Length: 253
Image (tube, rainbow, N blue to C red; front, side):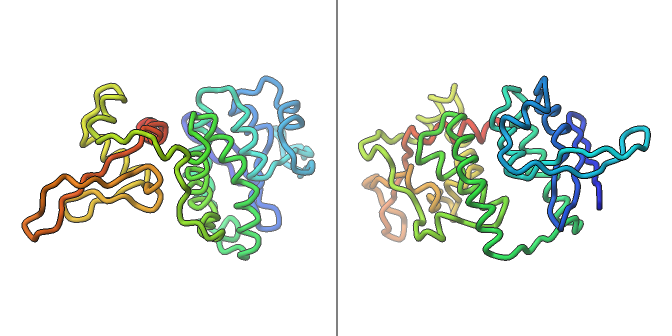
């Protein structure tokens, strides 16, 4: 059994490799997330079957220690009231897990069915977290799909035959990046464009911004009545204000 300690200036978590998969010491996770009674938190929020493994304590004694899976770790994150829970989540999923995969701590190329199963388990939790951040249903679904795709390599929307979701409010008003910036406390249009790009909603093609598949639910193209030097009509991209929660999330990331 391979025990891997991970530490940052703010958190410390031990990860145990069991049958080629990472399991987290439940007490470490619960304490990092500010739960006053780690044992109760694990029993209340974790749905996976109780799993214990012998781990040496500070005196070298073997103690049967509760470990939890990735989905259960995410459940503890979602239910934590600690302001730094989001920071802990980013640390685990952007640094700890990629480090384990990179160093061969457990299998990187899991079977497709296994990967899809993990994606299906994580998606409802990711949607719940996105909704907690203030995103509407479709924005939460898009964000959750992007998060799970990044984590597992499985794009569930694409596999279900949907490259995008239809906007909930087709009559929503659409605004320029400059107008959105004013709604966000006076950000410049340039800054908003960078946030849109950082959120994976648009990309720059030549001198112009173009909505990506993930952004098409929020964007509309408008004819400005002008033409480029080659005669092609100049179009302006405007965005629904429903994109604001995504931009605010990107701003604090």
